[in-house]
Image (cartoon, rainbow, N blue to C red; front, side, top):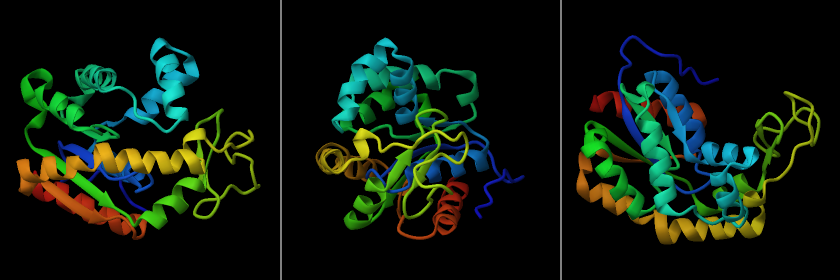
Length: 230
């Protein structure tokens, strides 16, 4: 069991998570955010909520996500800028799923005069491609309470049934084999260049971590990195 409870030494942090789909960024981002007492901002969660509520954003983003494609940069930049302007982000934040392209990274750098860039830590989580495929294709999701499971790593007590609310679990369209292959290709083409972008801008703030290890081990290393840069 991972202990991510806030510590006395924990404090403000501005963190960006990079890495391919299935690398465990969402899990680790949540643990880091909880430990440092700052909000986790997941563009994926915000988009899925918009799709479920059929907002104008959701109607635009839904078909793209079903095909495993990225949402247009200007749309996401605007969403994130609005979220970061809220009071709870003053002490810091953990970004999960943004930026995903060079244009988004440049847009982030100019938000509010670049004030978010101070003390920024960029964490790149790496996992072998075959493991990514296994992780992604095994995901199952509850459309009612948003709980997630994995057929191998974290199966529900009753096959196909959500432990929390009893609804039938589904495999999201973007976790099916064809969409997974497209998502990884999109990552290679559009998101992987961010590694060079941030690595060259500030090598001391950029860190690559092996994500193909137990969750608690990966979290311990990530926590230590962020604490050492404060």
